[in-house]
Image (cartoon, rainbow, N blue to C red; front, side):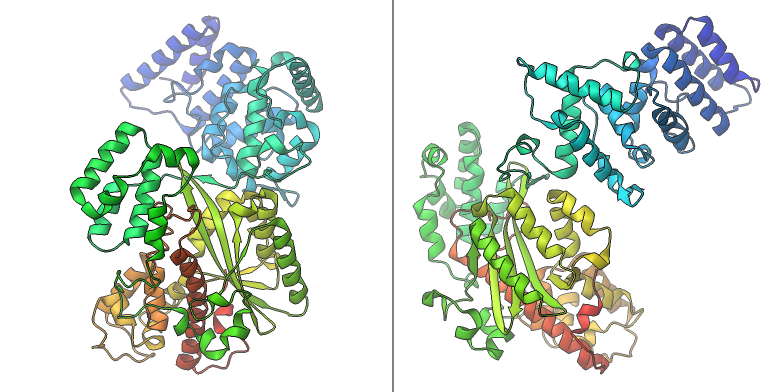
Amino acid sequence: MSSSRVDDLFKEIKNDGYTVDGVKVCLNYFADKLRKDPNRKKLTNSEIKTIIQKFYGVTKENPHLNVIWGKHTNILQYNNKDVRRTIVKDLVEKDVVAGKIAPYNVLNLVFQDRELVKLITLKETFIQAALQVQDLYLGHIDEFKNRMIDGTNLQDLLRKFIGEKAECLIEPLKTLADGVQEKLSDCVESLIDELKLNRSNLNKIDLLEIQQNFYNYIKTVCNINPEVLESVDNENLFILDREIKAKINHENIVEKYKMNTIKKDLALDILFCHLTGLMEDERGKILRYIGRQSKDLYDVLGKLDYEYYIKNNKIPSILNELSRSSEYPSNVIKPKYGDKYFSYKNSSLFKLNNQQELFHSSNSETHGKWPYMKFITTVDEVDKELTEIQSFLKTVKKQMMFLDVKFAVNEGRERPVYLNIHMQLCKREKFLSFDLDKISHSAKISEIVKYFFNLQNMFIVVFHWEKLKEKMSGIFKTIFIIFDQDKSKRAQIVCLTFLVRSLVEGEGKKCSLTQLFPETWEEVFCGKGKNNIYEIDLNDELPNSILRSIRSGVKNGMSFSQLCYLTTQHDFDDSDDLNDGLYSFWQRKPLRKQQEEAMATKILAMYDIMEKFNDGIKRAHGIVYKGPPILERTL
């Protein structure tokens, strides 16, 4: 084949009259000649680029050839890494800038490929696609937040443009009823005029399909419910959940119970929740399985009238009675590390302060049992607490807050249900649990999250920031897009697992963890008993075998139980805190008493973990710090 083989291809396409069948024949013949070429001369990058450019132009003149794009990809290599920029910058967006119509199937393919979406710089590119492509794919649209245009990301530019120029396109128009079709048509026509497009060259799709593309964009990018954008009451403005891949494995729960690694009341709760979501036949199969495996569980679950509880949305009284008879920390599930669980009695807060003064509880029954945590359940209570916190923060340069968020899972959707915080305000401990289900006002809930994460003088201490941020940014999308843009204008994150990792990975063959926590590191990372067989100085290099064990343990992700034991010499009872997105049961109403106690105890444990790190670093390094050392290791 000569160097003019690409020109020959397009001459043949022209001679066949640019018909779909003719183009297919020409492309197949061209591919066949390539395979049979005795010199095995493949298409060069220059030739691939030329084919893309020429066929793009041919498609603009002959729109029926859009159907060819996405096929014959051995010739039309639209996703070849060397021609991606040519497609997006030199072809599609060049047309967009000039007010010309880009071929609709090229736009369709661009939005289906993440690497191509990364190259988009114009909001009008999305708008052209939304006007022409049926069911436009938005799986990669999150890349828009990384594309900055004059200091603003493309995602926000497009959202603002849609809100100002095409507001009716994000209304929940379900049918083309009287007056609706005209309103929608006028909106589309106005948008076409705004972009100076030739409407006769646009691919014609149904008005509702156009509307659905814009509707899906607002819903996907902002986690906003477009159905209430026009409502005065913004109670349900945001969609505060995210899709996850989670399926309860009843066999796993039963096995955990038999192995005594999950408490009876929690196993029953989880299995009951699972069974109420099944059809009667499937429910019967699982109950028979439970009956064969565990008489204890079946004696409770096998006698329930599931249809009654489903209809009335109730939890059986026997499950509540069983949970009330249980204790926290558990006296059934034994500690994995050491021989004692962390409890409020171990907390340094209780050793250093008077309980009554510490918690200012209005409920005397809580004292002597467990730390009083105030549940915030109304919008008015939210406003009152945030106002009090704001007034205090005006008097300090820096403030530390401990944060733990509980998530519930229902039908493959995950949502936050409790946002728990601990702060010290003028020697007064504030323990708050924002009950998000009871607050039930999505805009106010978003305001809570935005408020805390946007406080510039706030240090937020969390257990595992990467996991928490993945969950929160998938739900509060706009808040965390802004959060990521400028570290100096938001709260600083102190991640306890990151702190451990930095002490392990940043010190070569040395590891100060062994010096900071000489009594516990070996049991946590090496599986030994409590009596260490190693005596290691801070300046010593660790044996490779020990270093590998420690790094492996940290890399695989420490559990809160491990971290608590490492630092405080007390294991943490997480048997009521299975917050793993699969077996959590924080959607339970009401919560079991043990769940409430677990929430408060975990916040207290986080405080002690931080204190132990600070004390250990000061002791091991002999350095005088102006403030807590861990605040120098923020994210």
